[in-house]
Length: 128
Image 1 (cartoon, helix red, strand yellow):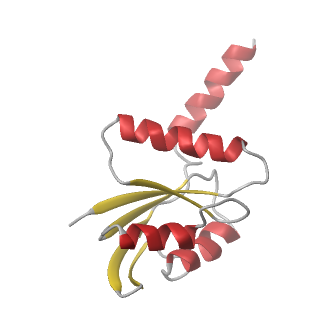
Image 2: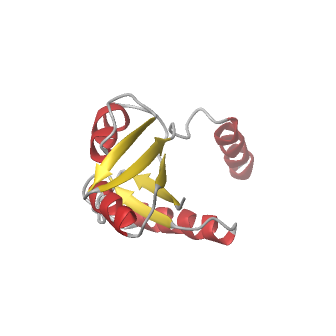
Image 3: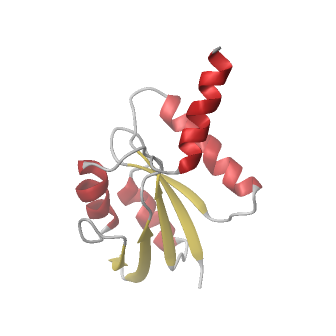
């Protein structure tokens, strides 16, 4: 069973988002995670759909899809699940990608994580 991770970003016409996505992908690799891919919801490339197909072609059987978003909304409840080929408002599904059966597990956005509050508190202290 080959596992892979797809970090999902919003996408942007500017390069800031892409830089952050690549930074976090690299950091995950440094921590020993393998098969890290990036997919964008809109504007940037590769798209979620393209990344899904590449991962399936690379023999990935289970995809852990991690949205690097602060909060849920229309993108994370409708758009991204559709692009991952899982039902709206769901956290996982079994999908067919070019004749391969792939399990997709979809994480929640990072915004409610207590560590985000810790980062905000650190930023306040830094600004004083």
